[in-house]
Length: 176
Image (cartoon, rainbow, N blue to C red; front, side):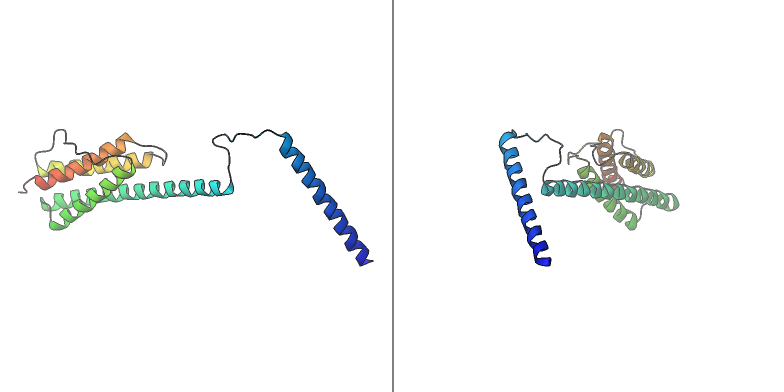
């Protein structure tokens, strides 16, 4: 009984495979090739690559947000330190270096270039420059937070450039 069942099963399975091969072959010959439109899901490999790209872009944007948060925090710390001591310490200058590196990375991630731009109306005194630095680093944080990974923001690039130039200006001002 079981041999009859197995033979019957094999017979039906082979008939089904043969019939589906003929139908697939006929459909291939009669159907014209369909051009793939952009945006349609392609092969599984293409889909995996696209998902990896999206994940990388999301991670890069998250890093940019973290950098802007850190830059704003450093700006506030430098301002607090200056208000207490009425001058900048060696530690504050190290923080300025870190802040400049962060601003450069943010600018690069946002699509900005290393073009040097001079400050409009640079503050003459170090206190005013440190206050402006804290203000602009806060504005940078807000502008980065408002952008998505799909946007190149002129405000982010402008604020990054201004942070970098303010840091250079602060280094050039003689302290009291």
